[in-house]
Length: 551
Image 1 (tube, rainbow, N blue to C red):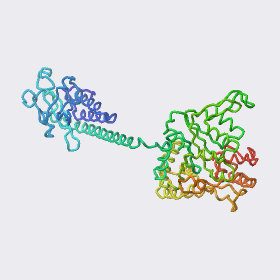
Image 2 (spheres, one colour):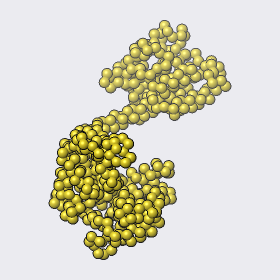
Image 3 (tube, helix red, strand yellow):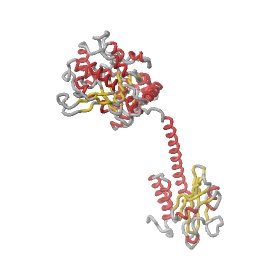
Image 4 (tube, rainbow, N blue to C red):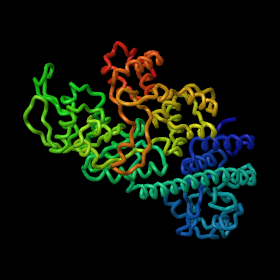
């Protein structure tokens, strides 16, 4: 049987209907855009079964009129003329009553208005007209109609049933499109409302969580972002000081300027002045050209001084002068360069205690702590842990191209109960290991408990005595949040490197198999802090094992 048989041949009409319905289903699988699907369906009805000049009429609520929205075989002018009030003409009656109509001869039916197509343009023989309702559930939403030559050998009732079947399918397309449209409009409205509500708030910039203490901190950061005063971020290691510094920068009027980060603990003392303040050509051996320092690079923007508590005393005085006078002199130069830079500093140390010990300048301390902001530890916002866990698990699954995993409710509660001395950084590390080692798509309580028990205790290496020759303190001390006088309680006490630390550092290296990152974690230090102590204790690269060994 040919794909497009003549409508005058005695053919298997049932098979032709099956082929047509199958083709309409294929159209539905390709698109839910109603104009494309409906027009192609009307074309199939015309070419395959002789239901010509098909049209779909829809009710317009605003104009209260039934009009042709989609057609095949009609000109634009003919479609534009197809407008009916409720109950007017054959299509208006079908829309009002919800019942199909068959007009055997359009020339003898008074209700057939012939408004769209002039009779003179139709074949000079008996022409029939069929119209069926389109429904959305029980509600009539439109009409599907077509012309038909009366003399065709196929029974007109068969054409009516086929048109009703196709009408049901097109009704679903229209219903689906309307639902998508409604949901899109609702989402757009919600997004507009959300943008209005968040318009005056500080964007999170990667800071996940909704705990009250975190929201308060974000609101304070939003207020501190205005102006050019120095901000001092206080908090334990892993609480997100750099994220807050970037958020303050991007919310300030300097957001179009550069954001330059300096890790004060990572720059050797001999290179610090050159790195921060720049140098002129010939200032020292190897200075083959003049180089701007970090302050100059941050011109018009923000300079973030991370781990400012690690600054050696010799550099503190020079930094103080820059902050006070807003000028910088390059190493080996004489010219004073004016600066337009905002400084945001951060530390996990107790600067007040360092001032009392003579390890940090009092005047620099007051200069840096004009606007102090304490960042909450993860254990203070335990309700955010499930959000963070799911986020880091999703990131790990994407990075390793594995199937998504989820945590059971008991597993999440166990993670919320953990104190997390390493804060968000430690949480991320644990979640990544759990995802890497997971069998299947569920991480249960037993897996989480085993992983947390395997986590090193930073306090386990600390002997009972304390003092200048005692251990490196790893336990962060919580404090009340606000007062300037309470700064001494915010961060763990700092103990300088002493010769008695040599045995502990070597023990940590042995326990970690020479892995510096792991050894630093055992001592409750960052890797940069641990490397600094290796150099101070004379171990250097020889005693530390492989510097880039995997964690």
